[in-house]
Length: 371
Picture (cartoon, rainbow, N blue to C red):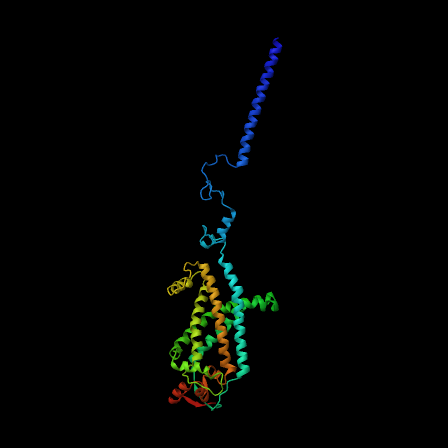
């Protein structure tokens, strides 16, 4: 009897011990599972989502697309480095700049240049070289002195180098790279880059010199209206409208070079010294005063992109104008190159193309026989 009772007690003790072991195991496994599944031991906040945000600084019900859309639209974050622009992951205006630069600017720029060459070729085929109707007299007069010619050639030579190197930056990889190969093209482009950067200052000096020397002779007058009405006598042989030292066509080129030169120089300085000049925001503020609605809150990166586009636009227009000027001043008109070559022009040429100026010079007896 005692043996059976002792046996029963032992079985009960074993059952109680087994139950305790099972409960302990379940408790431990439940705690580990909760931490593993939820990755947290603190209770979930009881607050409800507000504005798509869930308490606890997690994304919550806000979609990933909303986050990346904000990044794509240029949301500015915070950074601990001096370059605050690094807080902007994506600068979407870069896509717009690349689309304009590689699209309309490149395409229409090429058409402008080809159109200028085509017009000159057509003019030469129809009109031919403009001769001195009365023939050379053998007597010359001084048209430009040494200082004036120096100012002209400083501006002209620097502009030609700037134009060639600039066109290489825009069209070289399409035209020269396939022909020359990457090594030669890279060397030429690098040399052109340095030439472009440093000769830009010579161009600026030349523009200032020309402005100071010739501004008094390039003020518009009534003679310019007559000259323009007769097409400067360029299209009809024997027609020579009166003109002073500079005719209306030369005055247009003068103001194009001065105004375009100042504009392209300012945008060039902004490119030479990145993130230092904010010309466009201030310009847009002025334009908005006369009815425009342009953005005035521009980042420095946007200023750089606008400067590059404007630099290229003005450069292409100036190249097209100067191509015509070079033609008229060389093969297009007999005796024209002498004005900037030796500074002496034939007296008959002077009377035909600048009669008012020639009469003034003749009154001062500045003529002498040609050598």
